[in-house]
Length: 247
Image (cartoon, helix red, strand yellow):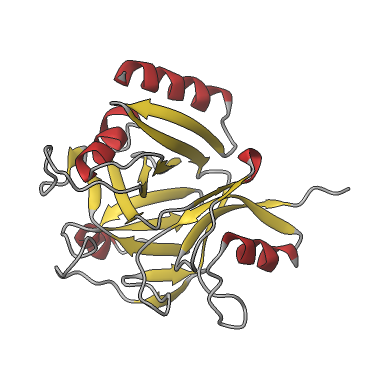
């Protein structure tokens, strides 16, 4: 199954370079939607507040905000944990402005299950950093969101993941290639454990670092597939922006 899934993704990447591509993938009897973004070429951004400082919260609201500049989302998903007011739990940078500092210490819940990490979008690349490594490197991120736990750290699964865990949720996250050219976003279509989710990023998607975004509330937008998951308001959203074609 690993070889079949890997071969499918290799063909997808080879044939669709320079575009956002989403594909259903089965791994170990669990189903996932995998969306690959060429970080060297695509307009990848984070969204939380509109120009008036109000929480966007929904994919439709992001599209309404972008429409004024003749743009729209081609892909998006929720991108990090948030408080009841939708403010980010951890570090958050939007268009070069830091709105929330880095939280380096352990704490309750999945976010505080160290090591956690930061997804960083820079000019021509995107990277997942373990949080302490992020603090040491101080990358100049145009956009950044902190979440946790890390799924894969330098090619290894998070040390706290249990292979026999019974905790299953719909989960979503992101992995990045070593050179920062590939950002691979995944949402599970079945209930999965952390260990199963991490193995997909490590063994099939070949991303040496991967970060968990959230579980249970996970949602995705894919314009090409006419998919726009709905529900209550979200916090941070990551998305790829494209120009609206002229009529």
